[in-house]
Length: 311
Image 1 (tube, rainbow, N blue to C red):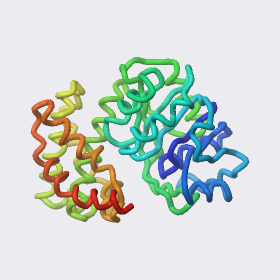
Image 2 (image 1 turned 90 degrees about the horizontal axis):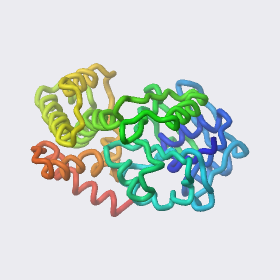
Image 3 (image 1 turned 180 degrees about the vertical axis):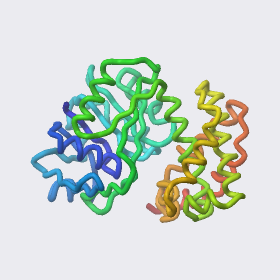
């Protein structure tokens, strides 16, 4: 397959690196010092699953999406808030058989892509991985089994999903195809949004959030808001999703922080809008109470505004 990796951060860099390592014709769309380092030294990936380097002669790195041409697969690895901005630049890469898989947090990325590209090429998707840019041209995978979850937005089975799964599996990437991708997307939002938002407000690690009665109660309340909002959008999560998610988070090793929390604590632009703001925006439309999310959003918004005007 010819594959374009749009956004070479912790997510795109790791999955794209594995695909290039496996011999797929891979184009990385990056920018700035990160792109310069990739062009000079290749893409360097450290991982518990084995360190590796993708040399320049094994892939193409560019900041010119328009010059890439039509590809078979686009993995979109930019931040959720950037999807609508970069989607128009992807039009020239999309042909009749192209498949686009967004890997963002939140539940709006696929819709943003459909608005720009039409419904035909777009799948629903998400990923599970703990990874980041360790420096220009360097990606660090720190934990979790790197996994891509994807499926048709109309909940159907399709040959193209199986084709993409096969290509990803050839690169040693774990792939899950749920019965309903919308359930998977909302389940991830139920976990990552409340954790990241409350973690950013309290500036404590996940174990402290779960071990403190008051913040554990807030986690439960925030997750219940997401659960109710999903149901209002006819996405029916398991009845015990909140309890199981809190139990899962409480059982993780101590010291964990969410990606949005880390961005906010470092004064960087974050996914506040796509992880917390989305609940605040969609709640009133469906008559769903979002008191906890509204408080978190309004508390974090001034810092987010400063980060976006100074970075």
